[in-house]
Length: 352
Image (cartoon, rainbow, N blue to C red; front, side, top):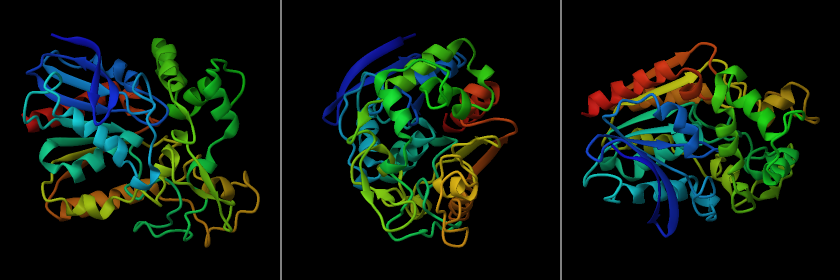
């Protein structure tokens, strides 16, 4: 039995990787989301059987991994390339391993990219509250049609500047609604009580995020379209923008189609059809002035888009299972761990 963290040189950077379980155990690769790190999986890992081989890297710019730049024009491929390099690291996985890959939020997009680029290396996918296959924001319907040609209202310019400053400063307070702790409590979960005794661990994870033009949130470009900002070419939020991350058709067309489980909550305010970080939805609520209306700039139907793409995946020969958790927010593995573990073990059983 092995538990701990190690530093691995792979894909030209040093990656911090949390490892648990026997080297010959059933392999599971955990990919964390934005503004977090591998530590965000710790409460889940404690609940897994000792037979599971867990590998959970800190993505570049998070946790203890190198603060390497993110080329947004590659979508989430920088992250996927880093993770793919770990699959060939003998100290982490046995040769030829095809793990169950679980990705949370941004990590769900990385997992999709990993499958598309390395279909022979993925045994199954567990997508936990994943980013839409059409990116985050700026697309109006179930086919991912752009709202504007330049995807205005997405990318690095959409981040709350006060939150970014508090994140960079390591603010641990709770009084201001834009403090990292307040954001953790209000948006990462539906009920702050679900953070429990792990709140400080999870806040540490959030605060490990590297800030700046090359990481979070990234650069911005001026736009003639509302709200006046469009994606830049560097940094995380731009990599998530539909200008650069649009993987739906590639996912449907992938030749090897492992089973996919999609688990999400109906109280998620980050990834939903009425997301509180989608500027078009905020405009419709009157929070942002100048919104041009639902015809010109509707909210992105993120959940509907994911469901439509997974139905296409199934129609093309794959299989998917949707698990919708009532009352659950953006972090099913923290808020509903019993159901999450059951779904993960169901996939490991299929792979085994």
